[in-house]
Image (tube, rainbow, N blue to C red; front, side):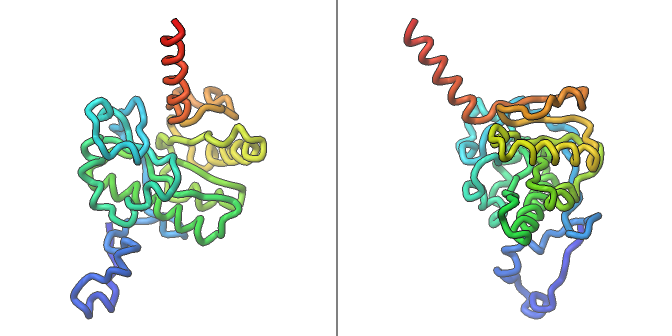
Length: 232
C-alpha cells in the first residue's frame, strides 16, 4: 500500500474532509493506466449462499454463513464508500463479501463509469486489507467499457458475474460479447454466477461453476412453497 501526501493537508496538520471523501488516505499499488488497485479473489472464500447488503445489517445467526453481496441499487450501499471503516466489524462478522459493484452503464458518462469502477476496486482491496474475504465481481457494459472494466483484476483468479437483466434481448448480446472478452483478458480459474437467466452455457468454459440464486428467485420460491403447503 502507498499513500499520497497533499501539501494542503501537510500544511494544515489535520485531515481534510473533502479529501477524505475520496479515500485518498488509503491508496494501493496499481498496474493499469486508470490507477485502479490490483485485486484478486481471496483464496479462503467459503460462502455457499448470498445475502444482500441492505438485509445484512441485522446479522442474524442463520445468515452468518453467507456472503454479503451488492447486486442491488447503488444508493443502498453508497455508505461503504463514504464511511468504509464503519462496516469493517460487520463484514468481519460475516467473513465473506462479494466485491461492491457500483454501476457501469453504456448510457452513463465515461467519467462516472470510471469513477464507479475505481470505487469497486478500492472497496475490494480495502476490505481485504481489513481481514475480509472478498470474491471479485466482474461487470461490463458495451465494448467501450471493456478495457477499464477488466483492468486491475489479476489473471487466473476466481470471479463472479451477474446475469440479472440478460433476459432482455437488448442486454443479452452485450453480456455475451463482454463475457468472451473477459475470458481472454482475465482467464478466470473458477466462475461464480448470480442470477436466473443463463445466456451462456458456462460449463463449456469452466471445470467448476457455482451458482447463486438471485434474491427475487428465492422470494418467488418461498411464496410457491407456502402456497403449496396452504393448498395441501
